[in-house]
Amino acid sequence: MFDKQILVVDFSYRNVHFGFDMTPLLDKKLSVDLLKRDRSQTSFIITSAARGKDRLTSSTVPDEAVNVVVDKAIDLVNRIDLHYSAIEDGFAFPVSGDTHIPGTESKGPRPDTKPHKVGIFTLPLGRNYGGILQAYALMKTVRDLGCDPILINRRFADKEVSLTPERDENDIIPAITNKIDMEVDLETRSFIENNILPISRPFRTSAELKKNMADYDLHAVISGSDQVWRAKYARGLLKDFFHGYLDPKDRRIKRISYAASFGADQWEFTEEQTKMAARYAKLFDAISVREKSATELCREYLGADARHVLDPTLLQTPECYRRLFADRVKVAPGRRITSYILDARVRIHNQ
Image (tube, rainbow, N blue to C red; front, side, top):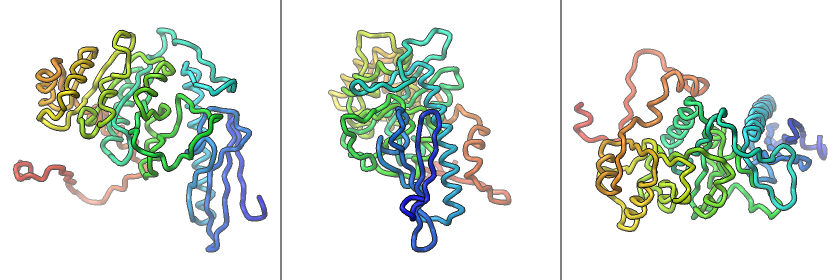
């Protein structure tokens, strides 16, 4: 007990120290907070901020509070193992000043016998369920092919991160993290941080992305799927989705798009955006798009040949999704048909 009011539970695993504060409330319930302990000398991010705490539940009964602590502790242990596995595979971690973190030294390029590292670029993950699911599916597909994918967490620059206090100059920002660093707290966060890993540090400018790309020792970068090539959605990220952060003269990293979408069957780019996209499209090693109409748009406006492919969500088997949502889906009894229609035009209903 701390101060005769708060029940404190501390854990230590692989030099990562964290704890839980369970604070009694007036209604005989508890709030539960996750905290980083000061003695942790690691690049693993425990809470939303490098220093601070995360509220896991604001009010719950004691038995459920214990379950929350146990579940989160198990989750953190699994993520810590994944974190150190990534380090052992050769990912480099930037360290501020003369700070030394044991075990995080870069091991240089991996031998050819090891899987290639592939960076995945997509629209910033947040509220869009479809965007999240396609990111999961593409990451899994790349992993199933024997590569090591990492979600490159490119965020919009005009958003302020409300969950993360400003870091001071001594804070360590690791190249790989287990946090998505959303601008607001959403219910989708837990799915992303449990199923779409590893995640890079957040990048909010192209200059920052370009400066730090060498930390990941990537063999290839993939844009897609989703509407990464729809200008009004991508906004300031559009150039990066055409891999404009890479040096045009450096061809060591393969440039790829998979099931990239323009989001429309008519050209929406400005003249300046068209020139930019056409210039970088010529540097691609492979271009594929999600809609048949997009192959014509690529040919007409970008001067590039593109293949029409399936969205990555359709590359996975039904069993994959059954396992993924096994603890969430409750099957209703009886025979039924589920209809999910995005475009309620008459001709669709009549098909």
